[in-house]
Amino acid sequence: MKSILGTKERMTQYFDADGRVHPATIVNAGPITVIRVKNMDTDGYKAVQVGFGSQKERRINKAQQGEFQGLEMFRVVKEFRLEGDTELKRGDSITVETFSEGDVVAVTGPSKGKGFQGVVKRHGFAGGRRSHGQKHSEREPGSIGAGGVQRVFKGTRMAGRMGGDRITVKNLHVLAVDPQNNQLLIKGAIPGRRGSLVEIRG
Image (cartoon, rainbow, N blue to C red):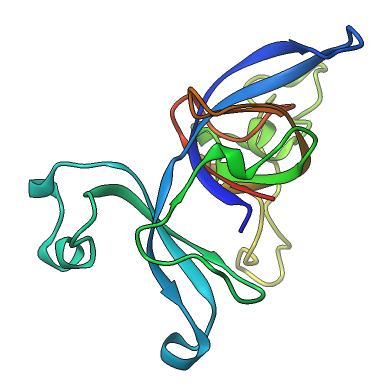
């Protein structure tokens, strides 16, 4: 299973062996611990449940404490779906050494939250004309529907909360692996702010 959890660190530049420079993101990835292996007989689907990060025991509810018994207390619990069978078992650790330079990965994480935004920033509306007669409607949405139906249609693009969405960026390349510091160097930008949780799938 080529999957791991991590936190986004920062962006940097990476020079390869030929001297070419690449934009890259540093990710503090793993180690993650297998909590449970799910199968078709008992759960109806195949998956590996993993824990990442450490948490104080008093902040974990009793049900999860029982699930973590014999292991450490984890801050994050996630599942990775499986296509076939796996040799992983409870207590196994997955580190950045699962990946190697040149691997193609998909990274999933929450996008930066931008709060309540208008239609120009949120949806790219042009706003009103910048001509004579315009006073306060330069960034207004304009008409929001037909007059005959006396209602606004569902899905009409309006102002509202922007960001904080689950975003997946595919076809990113692993530029370098640092097992000593549990870090991956991934080419390009990935979703989220510094410190946000990301899922990396090979």
